[in-house]
Image (cartoon, rainbow, N blue to C red; front, side, top):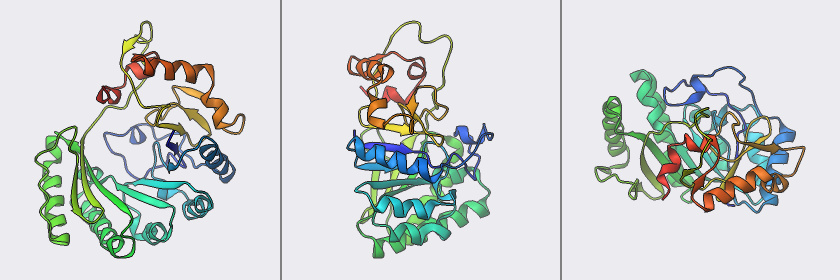
Length: 289
């Protein structure tokens, strides 16, 4: 298993229509330091090399974000940071200074739902960070995400963003050849525009689970997730803990991954069987053949 998602917070400062975070604003909190350290230990225990700081939430809003970066630097783990970029003017220097940060993904598609003034301001801050990173951290991978392919209402914003990329880096990015195998378009160095379609977040359905449905997923193979309260879930999309496998602090992550439920789900994926009701409502897993 390569990656562990550690949701250091489920708090976010945006309310995007495509994200559950804005639809269920209650019970938002931050992962405490002890639980974070236990999560890091679990990730190392299972031999992971990469961590994420989210399932839901904006990681850079955590008051201990810089402190958690320092803790991460004491391990061999590397961070892929996914952020909406709205705090990058404040946190950018901390991110660039941390050797533990391997990649930064900016969810710039979120700006399509903001006022023009706010959207343009946030994008400018992100582009300023990218320009600085190219000079100071040429090893850092950066994705400017536009995960809204096919969303007609986002077209004006996408066009504006491509224009600003050209003005900033002198590169014309024409992502007209988007397909499932061609999503990344190089801008310069290790800076990329990354396109994808929107997807519906899965949820349990009482009508499912009565029979096995054909399908597979990379959950419990390439990754597992730990929610802000320590619940270990099978999937990086299971923000509400529908497939709770165990609790960090009560068991080790390795023990949790060998629980009967985890083994059953993993065995199902290997046999192309979606055995859990939550998985049966997931459209994202249909991308895996």
